[in-house]
Image (tube, rainbow, N blue to C red; front, side, top):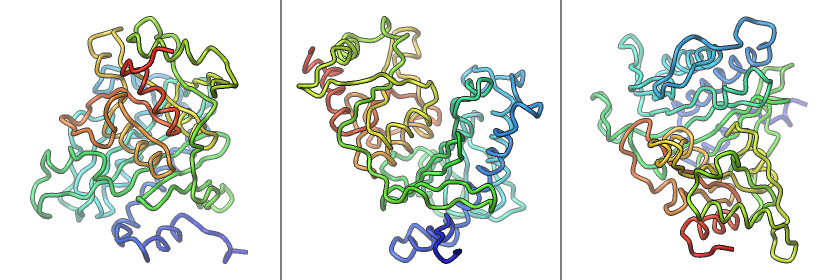
Length: 340
């Protein structure tokens, strides 16, 4: 039966026949990411048995309390990617600056941004969490130090983006700009097997994923959208249901497969909230690349996410992402083009 099984590695090689992004170095890089995902998955599945649940006693660059699995996942990604020779730089949510690569190992032309463990606040209650990654080619000459020009490229420059969701099964979803493909980890063989070929998000969904607890801190346009959504009307496609897990990867993955929208707008709860909560480089951009390749849309309510020019590694952004018609409706409310 093995000849009928499409593994992640085989799929990357098949893609390479038609798309130049799948070089040998690129194939190794995705293989290194898959290895890190397996290591993280193994420990996530044993979180209740091993001493890896709970706080690690430190904070990340945003002042957020780190979980033990945050630290483990970050180290798993760094160690898996640092020595393969495909990268010239790494950027992680858990590290303030670009992660240096050892001079003892070869370097390549790719840059990887990643959130090693998205949704880690849900670890202790066994809710699905994930890893998000984004890959760029450097723009400065190889062999020279990496600059801001390399690590602060807009999302449309991505050559690959993906995420891993650790749920009832572990699944890796990725795109290189030629469609979206999902691979489920087979625990018996230790391989990611193609399970969701050519994923397409429905043009219109029934799910809206928003944190209603922040309602009073939103601008009026977003409040009007939620009021409109609560008025169930089959006649104008408002037969909607609210589903919010609080884990970006989990909410996004469900909506990608079933149709719907995830919204985390700006708010006035704090000064930083006005810029949104989610990070442009390793949360919004990679998911935007994926959803657009699947036929959906992603914006900050005004501007296409992948057109935004980043100014810092950990830049925040509001995010409206999901089915194309749903994104358009939310944009109209946020821009005050409609109130009902």
